[in-house]
Length: 67
Image 1 (cartoon, rainbow, N blue to C red):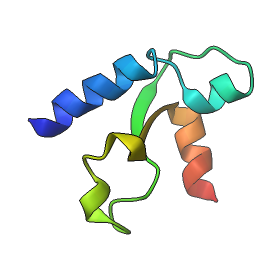
Image 2 (tube, one colour):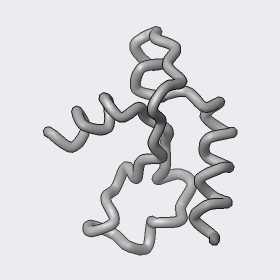
Image 3 (spheres, rainbow, N blue to C red):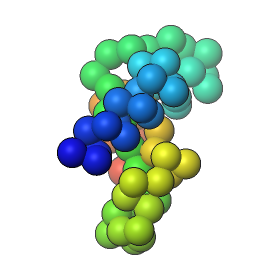
Image 4 (cartoon, rainbow, N blue to C red):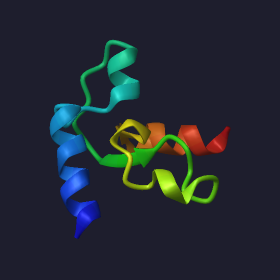
């Protein structure tokens, strides 16, 4: 329940736009995911930290996890 509420807050904060696309000047509101910048397996304590969350599209999310 906590996660759903926080996820919604992050989507609203980031205006339902992929932040990585936006940094490249592209407005993308399709296939969005709320992404943990520091992965949960690295720091479970940051799972509900809004500063550790950002909205990204599925494509950018795949690029993030390829690196």
